[in-house]
Length: 108
Image (cartoon, rainbow, N blue to C red; front, side, top):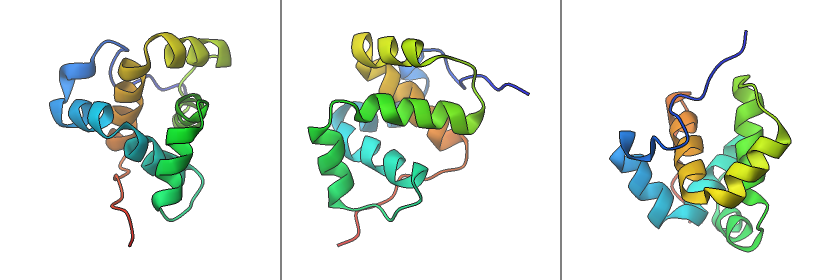
């Protein structure tokens, strides 16, 4: 059974806390989601990876979409990640949060 995104691409302000975190702390939000997707413990390297790797938002979006069984294509994910990056990160972070995952603090 196919799922749907919990909010549409322009539903950024549906959860202001996630919207704020995703826009202001983008590398750490992406890093936290990447760590969870790959079953790793979150750390500084995940923030650096998402900061230095332009593919991180796309990889995160594709991974969460596939894990949640949301229909879509790589081309759609690419367009959303390139043309609507802040909205795409907010949508992905909201889906991540609503699926029961938590954003991890950095382990020192």
